[in-house]
Image (cartoon, rainbow, N blue to C red):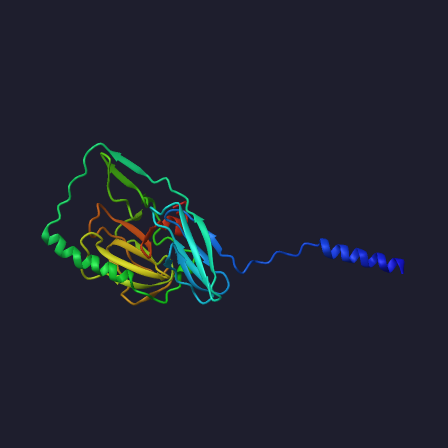
Amino acid sequence: MRAIACALLLLIAGTATAQPAKLPDPADFHLSGQAIQGGALIGTVPAGTVMLLLDDKPVAVDADGRFLIAFDRDAPSAARLSARTSDGRTLDQMLSVAPRDWRIERINAPMRPTKSTEAFLALRKPELEAIAAARTTVTDAQGWRQRFVWPRLGRISGLFGAQRIYQGTPGAYHGGVDVAAATGEPVVAPADGVVILAASDKPFTLEGHLLMIDHGHGLNSAFLHLSRIDVKVGDHVAQGQRIGAVGATGRATGPHLHWGMKWNDARIDPLLIAGPMPTGL
């Protein structure tokens, strides 16, 4: 009897001190990536979420709870992710957005005045309207879930976020990444998507032959200065599919690919989305 009693005491003591394996908290956000200016995060909402907000703006969530958020080049240092659940709770997570050290060039000369003629403005207005309308297009694209690839391999000749300051007056920053390449070299889709704009027949005044692809959930790519566009509006394109060719159309000093990306209204850095350019080129 004494032996049985001792065994029971040992069993009870072992049960009391054992640490059960920690299970994921269903009230947690699960995020992958880095919160940084120009960057993006992919995550999963807490169980029971019926609405997701980033700084009080709605965020699309798929049926499996997956979502995408991103941060503008000039995003503030903090952001609030809020999930509203079916039982009336609001679950908040504060995000610290890391700053970037942008390439800034200070010019000891005044900014050159730009001449905006009535004829130019008349041409530009419908182009800007077409770009804005394209970015409001909602598609079933799922490319935002993929690991992006570079649409063109080559030397990076222009960095996202770079900016010139003219005697204390900032000029517009560079809104994409430039890849040096020769006219006619192929450009491929960096991820699956749907074509939402294709200026094939008539190049835009600044962007030239402009192609825009929606990757879903507010994420889209823009490819500027193309010499040719090989797809049309409404086409579903697959990652790696040829979509056009490098050129120097529009306002360009030479042939190159300009790749810009936006998530809703936030301009983001393609270099953070696709990763470093492969070496040994």
